[in-house]
Image (cartoon, rainbow over all chains, first blue to last red; front, side, top):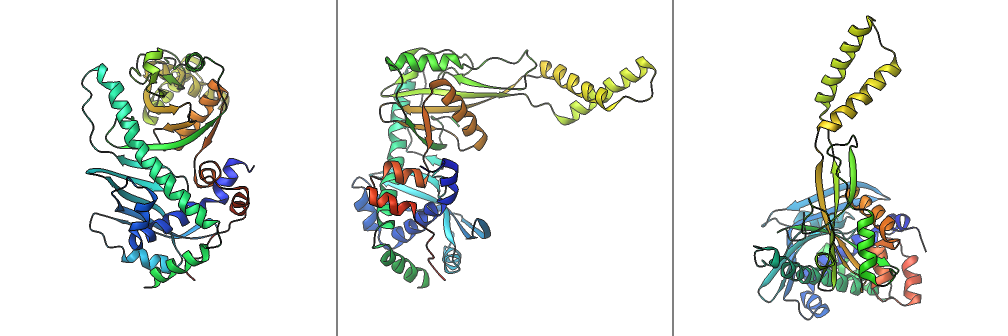
Length: 174
Length: 204
């Protein structure tokens, strides 16, 4: 078994490829995303995406696109130059409930996670219920990320990966 | 950012190993062993320890507070005294001036100056209260899943050290490679291919 920090650095590209694949899948095959998690209403790109062009471990160019109505053309242009997605903001819905969060590719750190609103904690007695509810809501995000990653990594280590890469290349070039 | 905040950050861990039974007692024991200590009237500048999720400023652990549903809930508190550099500089020069005038000398040696700097820091540390930072933890003991509510590198490192010291269990950060190995149900041949992966060129 590799040392944790060695494997973190050596394989951080897997997280970047996952987010690049995820963007491609959300844009081109949203029905596949829904098939991965039957409870999912939708998964769409949020208001922030970070794309980096790296050589070895050096970042040659980094582009952050943010804003609710930001165009993603520049992002696609970066992908054309060989960049990958390193951070992505996602909007997840289940029924009428909405979650938003940012996922970092190399660490799978989740930040700016906002869940559907839960009841106010007014007394000490409310805390237990609020914690249980929040844990359930966070779990919806963690589980979805795990399911998406599992689908990706199974594909990534399979013989069909070159075919997926071909589709992604076609999307980037279109 | 606490777990009940409107916006949170989560770092995921997997915990490997089991605590001696009864588990709840082992958890409480581990927490109590490294409970946060008050340094407000001490010369220490930094301290970290466990505190209770519900009452982080009045640390103490009752099972009813730590065990919520199927989860264990507690917090890491890091108290740090930050002496503003300008205040440190002012008191350092005041002390040097006083020492020179008392001894009638014109200069102090490098060692003396260094001693004075340390002395001033200690005296000021006694007068400045520590700033507490609190990071919540949710631990699903049975599932081995743990969430730390911060992505801050220094807080995560402090947490990892304290957790291992308190519970003698292995804490593994969940990032793409470890998630692939532990949580993606890969077969042995798939794991072998995973270890040999190299970056894909999507273009070029």
